[in-house]
Length: 102
Image (cartoon, rainbow, N blue to C red; front, side, top):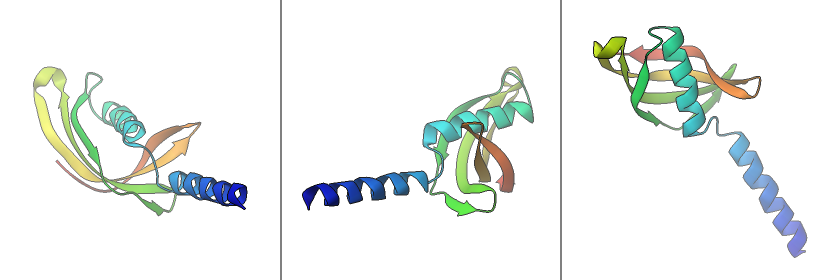
């Protein structure tokens, strides 16, 4: 019985982890790729926080608070919103914008 219980708990933990969306590190990497593709190649995130993600059509909708520094320091703004993250070829990518504020 203990082995069955342990296996059940391990399975439940894995399923919970799989349904939660990207980790903070993976989401930050995806957001940086997104910001660079839609702005400046020298962009970097000086602050990043991700809230609780919810499963949606095509990925996970996640609230994000970030600070973007780009264009040799001429752009230094908060970049907040709800973004859709999906796993593409083994990496998370931002595949949609639900809402965004600068």
